Amino acid sequence: MRGPAASELAVETTGLTKRFGRVQAVADVDLRVAEGDRYGFLGPNGSGKTTTVRMLLGLVLPTGGRVRVLGGRVPQDAARVLPQVGAMVEGPAAIGHLSGRANLRLLDAAVPTPGGRRTRRRRVDDALEALGLAQVGRRPVRAYSLGMRQRLGIASALVRRPRLLVLDEPTNGLDPQGIALVTDLLLQLSAQGTTLLVSSHLLSEVEHLCTRVGVMDRGHLVVQDHVDALRAPTGRLLVTLAGGAQDDDGGRVPAAAAALLGARLLGAPVFGPEGVRLVAADSGDAVGDLVRGGLVVREAVVERRTLTDVVLSRTTAVGEGMGA
Ligand SMILES: Nc1ncnc2c1ncn2[C@@H]1O[C@H](COP(=O)(O)OP(=O)(O)OP(=O)(O)O)[C@@H](O)[C@H]1O
Image (cartoon, rainbow, N blue to C red; front, side, top):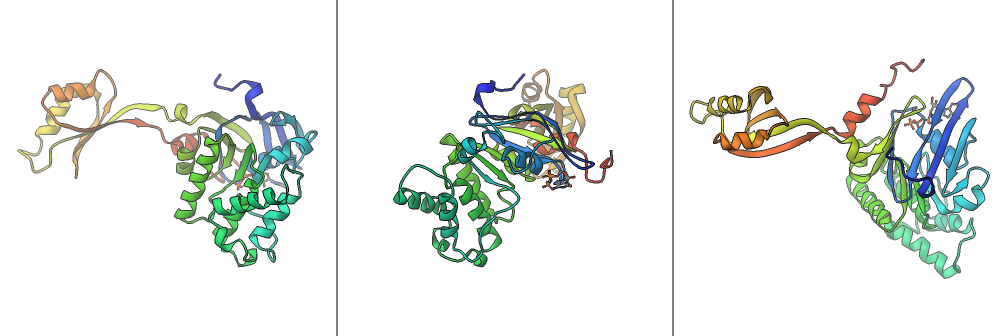
């Protein structure tokens, strides 16, 4: 189907399963994240996202199935592949009495990476700078705000310039400026070739950032596709025509539109501040017929499903069927 070839996969799971006693947290998940993807990992609370991500990073052992990350098996080849993965899972972790910079240096020193002291220092400074933390890098982390801690967590994931970046709720607790900074940074990293796997509850953010999404529901991966394919046209056109309730007899434009569209008119036209709004079936050059009929079309937009529509239609609300 729309799956990338196995050799180009940054993350591949096969039948990935995790049980915690009687709780089936993850069930038979085949995740496919291609190199270069900006992959959004979605799903309601408790649907198994964090457990899946923890298994990718070798933090939790699966009870079934296989994991491959950057061409190696996890946990077997973890020592080789995981240094190429940057991750922030379940919130930022840092040592409170140390400065942000000292935390990053410790992390950087924990793994053998190319370059001498100078290169290491530059890597840490670059990561602080990229997250807007250069000014506060010397302050102890316990004096950081929630948003600053979150940005330090992302800086920690970035410091080794990973090939694959795995971020759990990266914009959690950030203000709008922080969200914009992180989103721009992720787009920049992606343009430089970093593969992104980002879990989030903010669907509009994912819609803006991600090229592909996977949706979890009660442990199962229920959707995995390109955002463009999921945001398919609904088959409806949203049309605004010139004309107001006060014009002429107030009903001329809607009546003319109804006559021109016939059965393609879906519901009754309504007067809005910009003119007469109507919904039409997107068939047989509806806009052309309106124009040829003498009406002024101010706007005609092909209606698309939003990611929110897709996720809500495929997932179970909290409390619904949880015992199943
Ligand atoms: N260590 C554990 N022991 C027992 N159950 C666990 C453990 N970790 C997770 N679970 C259970 O596994 C299920 C999936 O949890 P998980 O944290 O993976 O979901 P999630 O999709 O990340 O949720 P959220 O969006 O709330 O972070 C839940 O029912 C959870 O209670």
